[in-house]
Image (cartoon, rainbow, N blue to C red; front, side, top):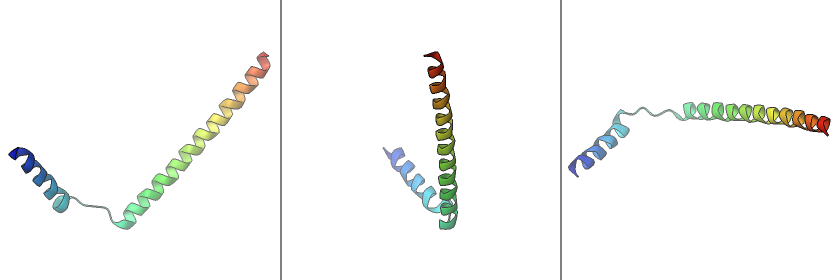
Amino acid sequence: MHSIINYCKNSFEELVHKTTWPSRSELTGSAVIVLIASLVIALVVFAWDFVVQNCMEFVYEMLH
């Protein structure tokens, strides 16, 4: 039990005193990059789905 308490104390000390946290501007910049990347990936997936759907509909129409 003592080792668990010691581990928690050491973890807290590391988070409070040894960890470097990003500034608000760095965090905002990173969030904007993630948002833009997510939108680009979503658009690529949407476009690919649209193309594949239309190709499959064309193939099915040709077979019937």
